[in-house]
Image (cartoon, rainbow, N blue to C red):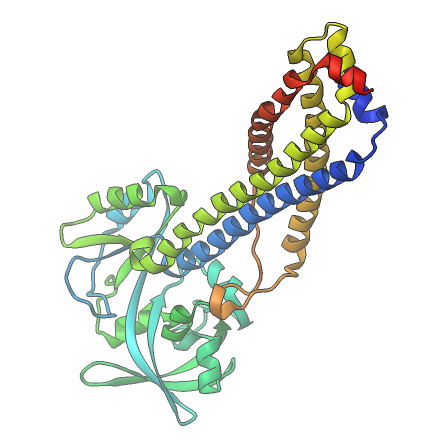
Amino acid sequence: MNFSYFLAKRITVFGHRTFSKMIIRVTIGALSLAILAIIMAVAILKGFKQEITDKQRGFFGDIMIVKNDVSTSYENAPIALSRAKLDSIRELPNVENIYPFATKAGIIHVNQEVEGVLIKGIDGSYRQDFLSRMLVEGDTINFAAENANNQILISQQTANRLHLKVGDSFIMYFVQHPVRKRKLEVKGIYTTHSEELDKMYIIGSLDLIRRINDMAPEDVGGYEVRIKDFTQLALTSSVVEDELPIHMATTNVVEQMPDVFNWLELLDMNDSVIFVLMVIVALINLISALLINILERSSMIGILKALGMRNTELRKVFLYNSLYLIGYGLVIGNVLAILLYFFQRSTQFFKLDPSIYYVSFVPVQISWYEVLSLNVALVAIVFVVLIIPSMLISRISPIKTIQFK
């Protein structure tokens, strides 16, 4: 039998505590709060990054194929890829699909209000899942309808400024020479909570832009490439570019929105800071509990030393006891973290200001593997550090402690 483990179990379960009782409770509470804070911090930061990234990817695609020129215009020069070339790009390992689009600058004039916008034209092949999730009113564009070219999606910000609602019509003037105008109907109102996107873009039909610009039926402003694994964005972008003619080039969503993605990368530092701070809090409390436990049982240590028990075995007794406290605290903290995680996932109870954070609620996302890794890392760090204060046992003299008894 492992005597050190047996003795630690007796002390932990049946042992009588005096002044250390409150310290033990505080230690377990501190450990619970530490793992709760670590798990929720990782879940919130990961969820926040995922939510913002998904919005940028949903609106712009992952990789954009455009004409290779130095123009800074909002309107892309027309390009066209053959069906065979499009199929070859779709067959690339990390490519999910490819969709055509075009953009056109215009001015909305309605209700004595004027607003400059950029219309993004899409066609019936375009997956509108993202737009459907962002809708607050109305529906996505119905490309099977006869008036598909006149249907438009506008942001809630634009709708509020121009006093528009679903079903309203307005005149849009397209910036070119000569100026052309079209009557469009609001099919749906969306919000991404990103001021840059909501202020600038509206969604319409690609055929409408083709007609306004006198483009050929196969011409587009560019292509959006959706990929499966976003971590392989740079590599996939390079592979796609190798498939293109020399007059075309690729740009990805990270290059399009560098400020947003640089900001998201800086958030990774918060995870590390919170983890370090919580580990320090847990260590301080555990070391205090360990030292008090050793001092409280100094007479027992002296008697066991006098009976021939080695310092190493005695240290194991108190390290096992510390593992019990760690396990108790982690169980409570993990249960609280999991309950809070699923509560927020299902209710979105905790809200954010979307004008600042781009989302209207606190998003959370974490995997079971990450939860397990955080627990193992915390236990390993804390247990290794506790070996140092446990060496105090070797300085306890059997003679003095027995005399004191």
